[in-house]
Length: 377
Image (tube, rainbow, N blue to C red):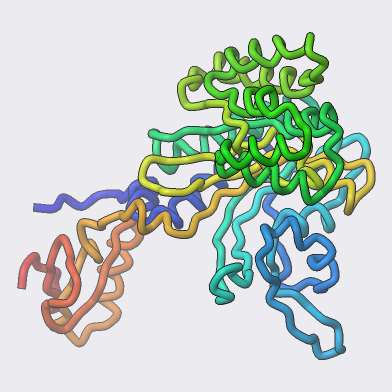
């Protein structure tokens, strides 16, 4: 027999689909670290997003004409909105978290799509602590999805240093190189580098470095004598290494220089998070001072987003029952029955009143009310 008692809030949260569960748990996590919820308007002027179209991964913007004739966009991105609209001062940090949907036109199918996201952004003058906190929050966020996870970290300054060392200035060539690295297509990368009189062996040796952070730092330091300036990457990797030692999660983090993004926007540490059941990254972020400075001068920024779409598919939460309690109403005394129902719900139980025993959904306990409450039909 089901013994009635107080139904704990956490038990209710655990019963929710994972997307809803994460929304609650991550909001609690972010607020513990001093982040304030950011609520975004559904529409903003199209020109703002059009000017930063490359930041949107090449996907289209859903646009329409407002009643006053202005061309508006159905919110295609949250980070851009936070950078544009947040209050930023020289001596304080703006720390925001969000739980929003963005809307874009899919690059391949041209269908409209909704992307559910939650995440955090830090704007202002950043230091080692801010980077540490973001990495820690990313790791804890992944753990809330699945404890079997990997955070792959990289650093944009490594690819920037290579571009500078080999005097690669063409935007088209830079893009091709980055695309080959992201796709781990070393064969075509080598061919491209040779065609452009670049030391392909050395270039590929560096971008192929991977593994534990301390080992990667040691390898990067060995290239200093060859004139490569990887100091920014080494410094940030050392900071992350210290976080991992303190928080005993070193095994979950690896360096992978194929994790890259647009050099016009990102300039420091970048990362992607993976969990066991998902075929793609469920978390992505990094430092994007270049983008922030484009919108707000002298602003540094770091953050990440968690993509909630498809998590319910990859991590289905099969509820034991649809409703805890079903009460078959055989009494015309509505007020007395409502008192009984309220007593159950006040204790945290879910209750559904029916006239006959339901067959289209599951329940844990069946009661009959005919003036008094009785278990069974």
